[in-house]
Every structure is written in structure tokens, then in C-alpha cells.
Length: 464
Image (cartoon, rainbow, N blue to C red; front, side, top):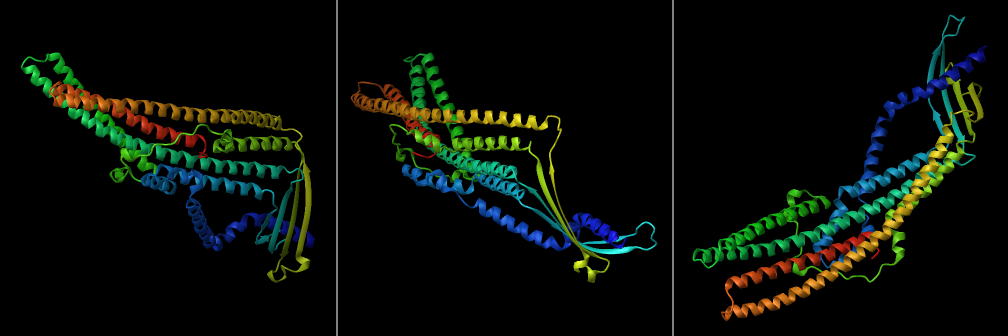
């Protein structure tokens, strides 16, 4: 009877110990917990501070020979919040992989359970001091838990490729925005000259109309052209402000500081070199392609895990406890209780749950596989489209530049004619406006080539 009471007390204490242990240890572990949280915060900060300059191929950006652009790329890598989130997400999936790995290991619980009890038929109470330790382990005989860990690791690996894609996307956005600002600067400069000329044309028309040399309709038309040019200037200034705001956010700064954003003048901007062709191997290095590949691998593992759910689960459990009515006798060998057991459990009926889960995983695998194929096709399309756009815009730029140079030569002849009194000043202004309009087209074409080149850099995953 005495041993039965002891066994009952110890077993009871072991179950109670599972719940009492955290409360008993709460006060003593509070400082430890705070210390761990501080260490965790330090780890997060250190993860964020690990800038992935290799992801964006900084040497390629130096080919533009623009110190301002290089500085903005670096500032974006260091300060852009989307990139910080992408880096933290990698660490998140890393920890999720560790959680899955923990399921492959034995779980050990221990505690201290002081217990008081009164047995039926007794008029006295008995006190117990118990120190239970429980070990449980799911025997991974069929490697199901190992496969779950491998599937989680695939997600972790995918997150790294997603992080790299984010770096490429942000750096590309910085470069494109920067060149669009340069284009806006030059277009605004040219537009102001056009406005100045159109104002002079309108004033000359008004003066000629006053003496009956020009019709009122021509004067009104000149006034409309002057007003329209002013409206176009407002649109260009608005566009430049939007681009400046975008650049500020991309580099992690407030749009209130856009006046401090420096850039090269258009005339000093670099014209890119166009590659004749792009090797097909670059597709295999694109981060989205590699990420899709990891998801196919994960989906295959998920199907394997779903199949293994039909197999029995094997669990082992062990209990060791010291218990006695006196604390001084608690750790005697005679006060020790030990239990060890195991079980192999197989679900006989789950209402078709496991069959449905297996079909679900197979369906998901097929979808992810098609997404992988589609990613490959889209990658080829993006590279081809970017290369064609660059070549066509370069052809357009060279053609319009040739036309502009011819127009410049023609304008010089017009200036000579004006000096000789062969044409009026009004004719000279109208030809100058035509020259400025052609110059605007050349400016747009040249910057479009740079933007297309950045698009090609992005499409090839920086492998230019």
C-alpha cells in the first residue's frame, strides 16, 4: 500500500510538474528571457546590416561612369526598407527550418513538483517532493519528419532567391528613375526655350495683326501654341517631381529632401553599349527561375510526406522521477521511479482526410510545375523583349540624331539668310522651334536606351 501511494504520488506529481514548471521558473528566468530578447534584437540588426552588394553587380553600374548614380545604388542597398524586409524574411524562413528540425529531436521536460494529498480511508495528509523528467521521441523510421525539414529548407533557399530578386528590382528602379530625372531636366530646359520662342512668335503675330499683315486666326493659333507649350512645361515639371520623390523613397530618404538629390547633366550622360546577343545560360541564373525550381523541389517533398502519412507513427516515452515525503530522502535510489514505453499507432479511419491531402499535394505539385515552366518561358520573353527594345530605341536614337544634325546645318543656313535679309525673324524663330522639338526627341531616345539597358540588366539577372 505504501509503494502504491508513492507511485500514485510520483505519477501525479509528474503530470503536475508539466504545468507547474513554467510558473515556478518564471520569476527566475525573467532576466534570462530579457537577455535573450536583447541578443535576438542584436542578431536581427546584424542580419539587416549584411548588405548584399554582390546581388546587384556593382561593377556593372560603374560602367555608366556616374558617381551620383553609384552613390544612389549604394544608398538604396543600405537604406531601402523593402530590402531590409526581404533580408529579415530570409532569417524568418531560416528559423522556421530550425523549428522543423527540432521535431526530429527528442523532447525533454523536467521540473519540481511539491505535492500534498489525502488518500481515501485515511485521516492524515501526505506530502511529496517530486522531481520528474519526461523524455518523448517520435521515431522517424520512415523519415517523414526529415522530409518536412527538407521541405522547409527549400522555402528558406527560395527566400534567398527572392531576396536577390528584390535587390535587382530596387537597383533597377533606382537606375531607371535616375535617368528619367536627367531626361526631365533636359526636356524642361528645352521646353523653356520653346516657350520663349513661341512667346516671341505670338508677340510678332500680334504686332503684324495690328497693322493688317497677319490674320487674326494666325495670331490666335500662335497664342494657342504658346499656352500649350506652357501646359507641357507644367507636365514635365510634375513628372520630374514624381521621379524625384520616387528616387528619395528608393534610397530610404524623405521626399521632403528632393532638392538635395544631385545628378549629372544630360550632356555628360553615358550612352550604353549594346550587346549583339545574350547567351541562353543567363536564364538559368535568374533568381525567379531558381526560386521556382526550389518550389518544385519542395512540392515533390510535400507529396512524399503526404504518402508517408499513411504509415504508422512510432512514439517512445520515458519517465524518471525522484519522489519522497522528505526532501532529504528525495534523491535516494529507493525513491526513484522509472518508466519506459513505446507505441505504434495507425489511423484506421479518418474520413478520407489523408487521401484528400495526398491528392491536394499532387495537385499543388502540378500547378507549381506549370508555374516553373511558365517562369522559364517568361524569362526568355523578357530577355528577348528587353534586347529588342534596346536595339530598336538605339536605331531610333541614331536616326533622329542624324535628322537633328541635318536640321542644325539647315538652321545655320537660315541664320545666314536672316543676316542677309532673305527671311524674316519670324521665319527664323519657327525653324528654331522645329530644331528644339527634334532635340527633345533625341534626348528622349538617348535616355530611353539607358533605361532599356537597365531593363536588360534586370531581365538577365545582372549577368550582362
